[in-house]
Amino acid sequence: MVMLHDIDDVQNLAIKARVNGVVVQDSNTANMIFSVADLVCYLSRIMTLVPGDIIATGTPAGVAHAHGPMTFLRSGDTVEIDIAGVGVLRNPVGEPVGSSPLPQPVGATS
Image 1: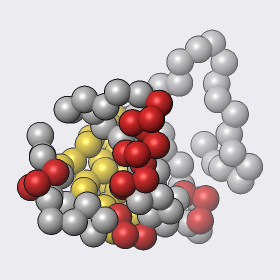
Image 2: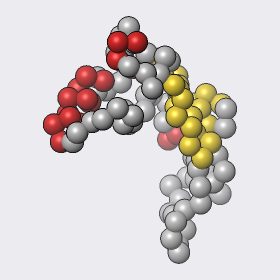
Image 3: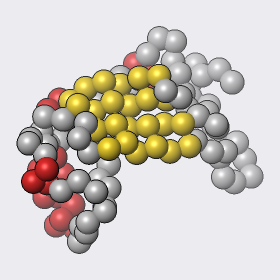
């Protein structure tokens, strides 16, 4: 766990997203639409934040629909979000839950 006093400037941290080890987004918290302070302020008004909570900030520039050709996550992929000085959040992508397959985005290939 990283404490606030261990970070020089939360609004100036490198943030990267990787899919299967390939960097797909590379930016900085300074470039995000909402500041870290704004996110914490908003969330703390509607819920109690406790040590260990993870706040999803959204993603920096470089989402899949902006790429050519478009690429989408598939079952078996691994997604990593790496914030410098904070750590890496790593999640596997699983199969859709439910009896029917998810609809494919327009232009997506199986």
